[in-house]
Image (tube, rainbow, N blue to C red; front, side):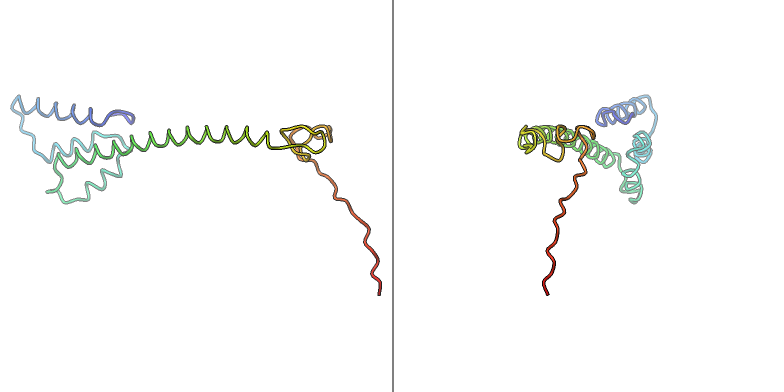
Length: 147
């Protein structure tokens, strides 16, 4: 099975092949069926396989392995759809907020919307339009201390 394959279809194909072998008279034990199911899945399922192999051998039935593989596949599929939905929502929100924030900014130097005075191109054309300008702070003379 490939990484992006359908686990339900894969298990159905494996069980169909096993049924065909049984139909021609081949005897296949449950522990062999369990082993075939475990070795036929992609490497990304290694954590699940390790957890299943840690169980006692009398608990490793083909039905249990079928259920666990199907559950893991469904969980991954659901996680992917949730991730795609979250990414789409995040993209939509960030695009809206970026455009909204641009209209909120007002330059006190050139009186235009979309930027602040610190980033005003008209204020200091030598630095380019996207750099923050190194304004010098106004230094006021201090009053002498009267003592």
